[in-house]
Image (tube, rainbow, N blue to C red):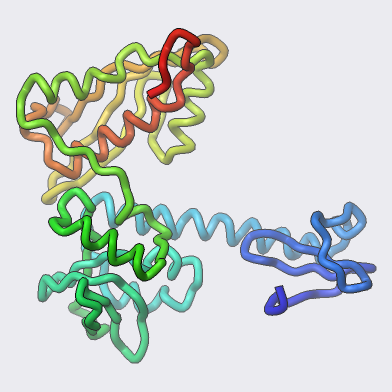
Length: 288
């Protein structure tokens, strides 16, 4: 904590460590919690307002980069360069596997400096991408990264982490046969929550759009927008809630399972698995 900027607040000193307010006493000892007396100071109020802003900013950065990722949208390299100095933006971009739109080069985004994006390929060689008005990158989904196992191994060797769950995101492959596909989308039917409010809360906490009737997610694949919908019955928050079937919709019409793309399928099953994992497990039921 030696690099924190401490400010005097009565008998204490306060600092903002990321999005956490930290205090130390007159002897310089860092305290486990901020004393109530320190919380009544104007300095604490100022830091707390800053903390709230940073938390909101952090969520917005993550939401935006996740949207570019899930919708396969090109991201101008100028945008990446402009936001890189911001540590919260940088935490979302750093160490993502990105694809250069103009050349098809793929690499781990390691740095932005000297007017270039600096990527590392699987051989550890550097790829430089000039920051100009025409350049853009995409953030490929792991379901369509052919050498995903190699990229995961490379990232593990480097000991890197990602702010946006890309490389180590769970991938679900669509079955080749119709029976297997039908079995997959119906696997969650009758999953039960003791309280519907827990079902709704977990789904919203996972970042999914949630009503009393469905949990949903929008994915864009090959320029086509698909709404993924998991039926739920959660009308009374204090009563039980149940999970239904997983479906896919394009332009408001049901999309045949054989036409669902690999990214959309993987994200749909991932969403359903997340919701289903929080169900109430009866004593007679073996946890999955």
